[in-house]
Image (tube, rainbow, N blue to C red; front, side, top):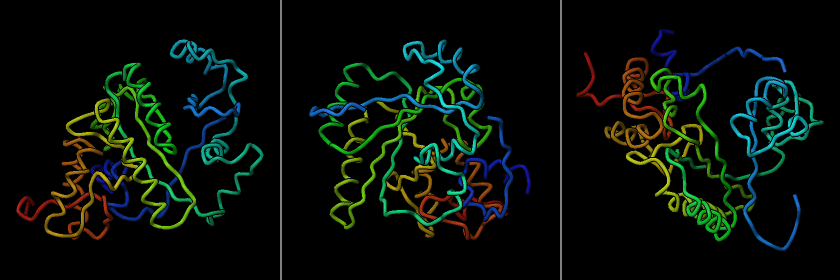
Length: 273
């Protein structure tokens, strides 16, 4: 495969470089309803270990939460996959073999990175905006720890040191039709715009796996490199994006493996003979 290509597929969007036919995974051992509309905040995380190892860490890093052993659920790793997919604790892992969805569900995701704390007044205005908009939810994924010790060039994923947390904007709906699509997509775009003062800038960074086409798309034209650079530096930062383009141009010069946000090939004038 080669060292460069192996680097690229570990975070650079594997669909830009080929088709993975097989892979191996290493397994590891194991609301009050009222009439007032408000924003509910919850704290949730995944720890690869038991509760006895986890509690000293949460007591040290998040003492305000006051977590107890009874606040955690221990399970094999494969069952945590079910949990994150919103299955209940009695569901068998065999359900993951069913590739037919139970119902139609539409969704839109966006992302941001926060590098400086949002002031209390900013959070209060955010909660008010969420209530005003009505449907969009936010997930704050805390960063730091071992992630911040890994160089941003170690893999294509560069969002490590300097980030407090990642924001996921999410909206889901079941109504079909263009009117519903427009309504919910406009809601999430409105909240994303509102957050501009509080998030990363120049560029406004984003997380690849949410595939936010709002931040740019490319086609297979002569201008695809310039188009791809718009979203590429947001997902990967400039240095990693440049390296991904070089690898893509080397292994797939005809841009066979492409999508609306794939890694572009280098412009013809910028290629080595």
